[in-house]
Length: 420
Image 1 (tube, rainbow, N blue to C red):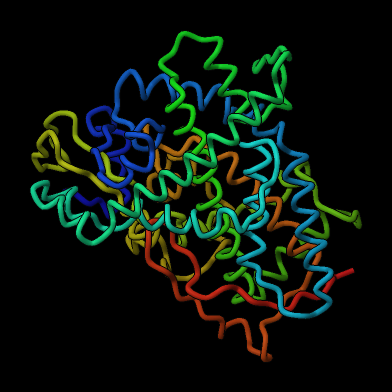
Image 2 (image 1 turned 90 degrees about the vertical axis):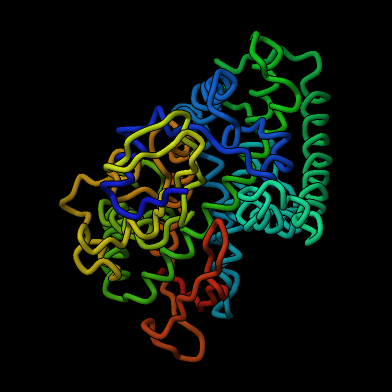
């Protein structure tokens, strides 16, 4: 295995040798969870992967499709704001609220309606754990029996069965609802992702089997719900910890909103400090500290080293984002560093890679960022936040969990005071 911990090394992997290092190794537990690696994230590089990526990019996550869910995002943000307002000064769990917000947006966009959060919270936590847990069988195949002995394989099969039962029900609902209707995924932007996938499956000559449809639904639902909430809670944590920066963002929000009840998505393009805050949050707290492993398709020369075909290659986004040779005061939260910078998180600047890059970059980037920007802008516009027990912002505990996606170790509990 090769681990890249600098922007230079990441660029070699994600750009210079992207074509040679774009395969995905077969990982035992994700293979079970994703219908035999039939999803976009874990499928091997080849014609099948190219087909399902094309479907995802063109039909599910295009800019036009993401914009079609604007009202969903604004509605659910308004619900979150109302819930905080109703707390009337009592403790509010911003970690839980960001999860609820994201869960509702992703459910409505992916599945067509909201589902009770309690149905998923524990299941998603188990899924995230199993995708990120160390599986000895991935590295020493003749010791794969250890994953059965310690219960990991059994847990993976149980979680896969529970998700499959749920997704089967969702697909059945959509088929019954659409009977007799002529669905056109190209022209109807009101459709959810399941509608679109079923339409594409019925009208195109692709290898989009029922298993593939289920795997893509799992990608869109689980991927969006698990990775977006931590970015919201880490951004709010950093702003609470740094009151001067909170005030600066609140001032920008006031100037943009001009007294209206909510900030809408049209306003976000004017909020340059908001975008800087989000970039700095993603630099210090990338949703995944390690990008999922790639596998060399052929022998390559990587920064002077011979890397043989079959070698796994991993980019350490956490280390890249805190590299002191690239970032001044690398461990400090300083959004201002992005105000006069063209560095972005879209995979073209290798010093900032929260969503990866190259062929295997996250296609859901626009969808995730739209939720983060809108929710964060309205939270700071509508409320002032204080920590309980008269703690100062700098006393906020910033301890992290371990796992594929890094959350706060303790929930972000605050008291919120309406600003008007």
